[in-house]
Image (tube, rainbow, N blue to C red; front, side):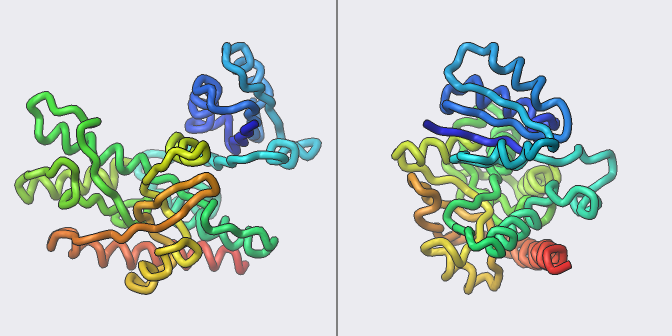
Length: 280
């Protein structure tokens, strides 16, 4: 029996994600939580001919507690959409969940305070950046190249300059002029799946990039010490109980080295914002 709880299920991300979860047949139980509409969405989803039973909860009557009780996987998608000209950081005071770079430290600190923090089971999903990096590479190369033929590692964070697509490590290798490459990196940074984790839970090995608390994951403490930062997105080997190992970033190009320092400093600000938020 696998239960998933989707927090923010009536939002622009939560609603299609709810549909995907029900259609996937990965789950036996799906609980939806939001401030509005969640029960109605659940009613509609229960008409889909897959085995999962869907229940929707609102804030009243301890709805959040009911939605979370017994959940094997919890996905937080809550957040209003950015308006034109707004960055994720612009929304922080009213919508902290938009900023993944700060949200993960907030979640970690909250779990620490209640004595239930397990670093190997807390992930900021950054797969979207990997998908974008691969798609943009295929488009730039042309010749009917398929985005699915490429895998471009992306490390760092999940906002603006903290996103570091490592085209030097692309598989298969990508050969593009510097000015084109710079444009691709910018698109990935400012272009603004849970499936791998579910495969790992079932015993099938998986490696995916994820934004994590490095010191709490085998192999991550060394990366954190090298970079002088605790939260960072790297390749993570996943298993049934979560993260098994954080994998080294590897050799990067000179151009990538230049933007690496910018990303680190930007991430440190995001993390500091999260810790200040929690202390207040």
